[in-house]
Length: 396
Image 1: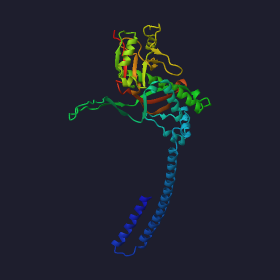
Image 2: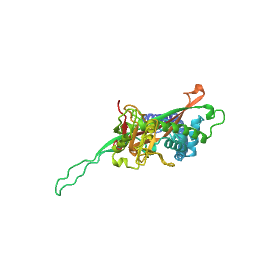
Image 3: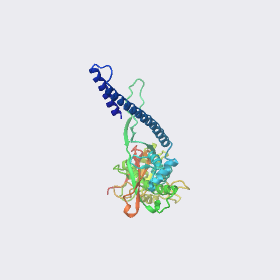
Image 4: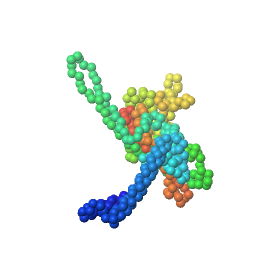
């Protein structure tokens, strides 16, 4: 319409210019009639344009109100709100989500494309990880949003006494650096469509949360424990055994002695072995072997075992320090490292973000199942390689 109005105005100008060129001060009757007809059409177009502009303005105002309302609605949604929880449950069950639920779910979009677990599910998984992964108990744990670096102390420098007026020697405090990157830990769990509610009785939110948290929490814990103990830093965290220094090498390939255990204990610097966070980590075979170790017969005829059982909820100890046992640690075999001792708080675990879940409909459709994919990101490494030492078995 604006283009038509412009064309008509141009046509009116042509009529006026033609009359002036002929030296006429007034338009001829025919030209005047045409000019007035065009003028009437222009006024009609202007009124139509004005009405449309007023309507568009009002529509924009309504749209802004709607956008602001939607934004306010999303601002009020958190991972522990009922809106997000309901939308998350429906997305896992495969129910159709309305616009409000899609907006609520969008606040939990994770870096890997899934949806962050609700606060309730995340809390249950975290609890199960801590209960089934002792490295989260005896190591140090922080949560961050992106890759991060830690300073490692390689030398504190030395100080020395000297005569008054004598030069004071320089001695630098040296630092290294360890960078932690998000390493993906994932699993796909198959679930039957009937279990999720296709038979007309959808799984309740509480049951669904417990089901997912229990399954993923325990499996994540076991995968993490293996990585934090013996991971080789290849698409996995670097385990504490991987870069701890060797404190003692056993004389045999498949046996340890009490003397070797004691020598390993004292190979760790006093500030680390006497720390309240000093611990033993051993394999199942090493545990069995150490439990049998005892000292020579005393004058009273008694023999003391190196391993001391804990009383009540207190842990078992070796030389007064707690013992943690795992099947993931090497057994007694040539060149293996079945025993570690030291201040395990120097093992740093870094969690990146929360737990992400997504539903996979096509992967197992032929068998009447759906996949639930769970993902977490973390990393780990021993920041001070002198704080923990391992006992290595003889090569042959």
